[in-house]
Length: 265
Image (cartoon, rainbow, N blue to C red):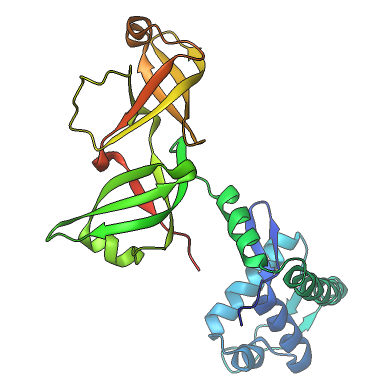
């Protein structure tokens, strides 16, 4: 049976302020009255414990631990009232956090699928086109593998990745994956049955929007399968193809221009 787990932590000015490990260090310092002894209790090096205390003191804006230097063998240490309040707050929040995880596990028959969807939304990348799908097949080669990815609406993408990357990603039929495609790697053409291209991916759709710039234009294409891809083309090409909203086009993408990724478990 799969379970949902999570960790709680604090941040200050974008830096990690502390989580369970650092709060545990504070608790042990309070109990032992010594940073060295507390470090041994939590399985942390003496140097690492001092660095953690310094970081917490700096980020808190006021001391959390007061020390009297006594050498590597000891030295007294005592928590300030602020540190004790921090421990109480963290322990209270951690109890609420654990309760939240229990409730999350019970909100759906298969909550992990909803979490997977949320994780996709939180993914950040500079590639304008991010298409989720399922690996349909992997044809292995000595250097490169050809990966076919089924995406929304029954359409299929073909990507070429190195064999090493394919192995590292664990690509196999049925595995959830995603394709990243830079907008500048998407070419646009007009439907023409007589036109033959070497590009493996030729996806039909229609223009959903056009944003013209001084030199280049951004063109959104609603694929027949439901996905939307964005292409960056020159204004000259935009005018030559007479592209505007509703015009039927073909999004052309070379297999080598597609980056394949998987979601960490």
